[in-house]
Image (tube, rainbow, N blue to C red):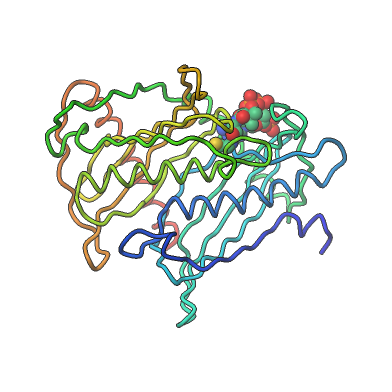
Length: 334
Ligand code: COA
């Protein structure tokens, strides 16, 4: 294998520790997303520097919808495999697989499959987008499939602009099971350990904060153990710089019989200037679990006002669409 070929594949593994998990031992979805992003960033940055010119860093710009197929537990070993699967002129797709290995029994299960898009940004000027060196495809079909995925996400991005939904503070004494009751906000000062060497936040760090807030919202609504089931496609429109204050707000938008959809809005501002901008937004789905990790029914959501009703209806439409896609994928596998 040539150096060029080996650079497009990466394998990492790490044992899951108590600080990776919640109090009942389920590894947080946010930690898994962070590991996935780290692997993608390494393989992407390595590949983009296999050329002459400015040194660069692969910045995360998009994560396709990601499903959490099985829970991972403390003591298991997470194996993360990242592979560059498509390169456009200025972006590259990295597909990542995560398996959890029980090192006592040898049992392995596929817990996640994710597809991430990175853009090489020059180290001299982080807003200068560099060219991506071409990759070698196994055959023409593989390249064609990659091009289709690239065009599909580009089209979807044009159609779904950054959500400009406002964050409305909850009422002072909200009733249980209302949106306001579980709405939660985390304020975080971006420090050096959150950042790339070039002083903007790692995508994985942002996703971890988002998952944390979404998990708090879900747990406050149903008062049980909860786990991340999936995250809808996320676009990272703008960088968040070191020293910024990020405000991550989560609120329930939709509740089905056994799942909750939480909208997470990430706003950033400098510490001294109050003007905020929307850096990222995403929808997380969570499931409530009993002591045996079996899904539990979720309390219905008490809707108040037109905006909540609109968001609930939009969430319901996404739920129906996603469920139909999952069923179609299952049928294709059979
Ligand atoms: N998903 C996938 N690809 C994307 C994308 C997204 N959300 N946004 C941009 N791209 C791709 C474009 O398709 C283009 O590639 P192509 O020419 O091969 O088609 C390439 O990025 C450059 O696009 P361009 O329009 O020139 O740049 P931009 O104005 O979108 O800026 C960044 C690109 C990377 C500078 C900007 O999106 C950014 O700073 N994003 C935040 C990155 C970040 O901070 N990540 C960590 C998350 S906290």
